[in-house]
Length: 129
Image (cartoon, rainbow, N blue to C red; front, top):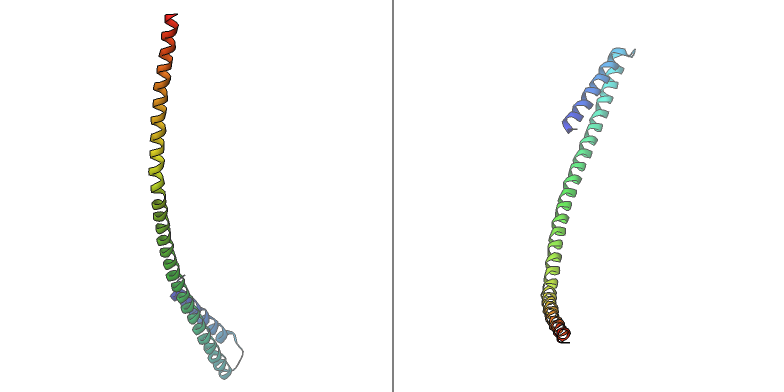
């Protein structure tokens, strides 16, 4: 809801109340003028309070928005640094693991060759007998 709509509604409500009071009161003209003046002063005070409350709320929202934005920006920066640090700490280990896996694959290939040689020797031995 816009502030201007709220203030307009309060003003129209106050005006309608004042007109109703003027038209329905059995009081004297002087008493009615006094009551209208008092009501107008009360409405001015209430409108001033509402205006101050709205300004305070607006300031609080702006402050919270700025703080939230700064906090989120700092969080994003911290996460980026944490991910970068993690990548840097994992990279050397990835290289070492790759080398170990290559060594294991080479050893397995050598073992398969040795097993093939043994298998060939057994087949040759069986054929000779």
